[in-house]
Every structure is written in C-alpha cells, then in structure tokens.
Image 1: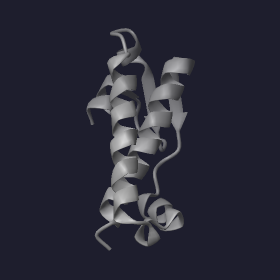
Image 2: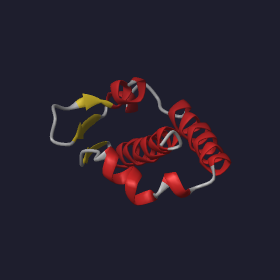
Image 3: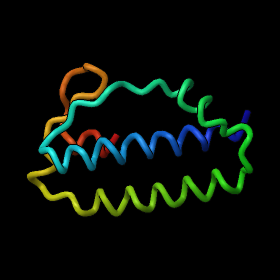
Length: 96
C-alpha cells in the first residue's frame, strides 16, 4: 500500500536516530541490520491514518536533523558497523 512508503521512511528515521544517538554516547556503534519489510509490517502502517504517518515522519525527521546538527567534527569520525558490514564513519552514515 502507498502509506507503507512513508511508514518505511518513519521506521528508517527511528533506526537512524538510535544509531546516531548510540554512536554519540558510546563513541561508535555496532547495530543490527534493518529488516525493513518485516518492521513496516509489524507496525501496521497500512492500518494507520495517513495524516498520522505523515506527522510522525515530519516530527522524526525534524528531531533527527537537530541531532545531526549537534555532531562535531570528531564525532563525525566515530566508527559505525551496521548489520555486520564494513565499518563506516558516522558522517557517512548521516549523509547516506
């Protein structure tokens, strides 16, 4: 369903928020992969009012932008390992 697309974007923001915050607190992060289809299905975005999903997406991304603005140059170099893949910097993860 079409509403699952913004639902996925909400879930992605939630995952990125936790990655960024944990990396900032811990000086880096090792985080599991992202089973996007399963996570969107479990959250039942298809049964949620579209305006609620859009408001959630907006609030999550505004907050995530605030977190990103607080990162300094040293923090941007923290190592992030996501889903067992090769380490990337927090900066690369944020830009991605």
